[in-house]
Image 1: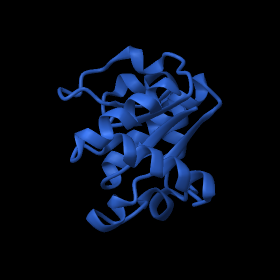
Image 2: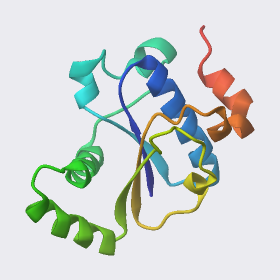
Image 3: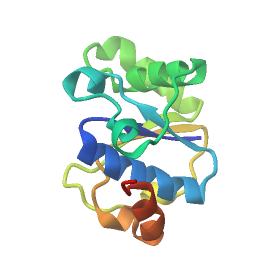
Length: 141
């Protein structure tokens, strides 16, 4: 399962959602997960308000969010390093976008287990093959 994290403000959420659409086209078992920290740092899940894109919290999303947060903990390496190694054995991992935001076609390789994708994914190359789908989703009524 691929899980694209939706975070920050509307612009970031739009590019993350477009990245999700491309990944979903390649792997039907792809979903989005809203980073709850954005609820307080920004205006929440703005894709619903602006483009009527639905996101529903459920028990599976809560569990996925828990795993995602565990993978991102850096404060207590004595605890988290072994935990992350165990998660990696079960093919649960976190992929962060490159710091220079450069396009990486490796992001479209089929993943095993649960892979969380965290980043802005602003390069249009991440969703250039589905330009029409993206334009349709991000249209105003």
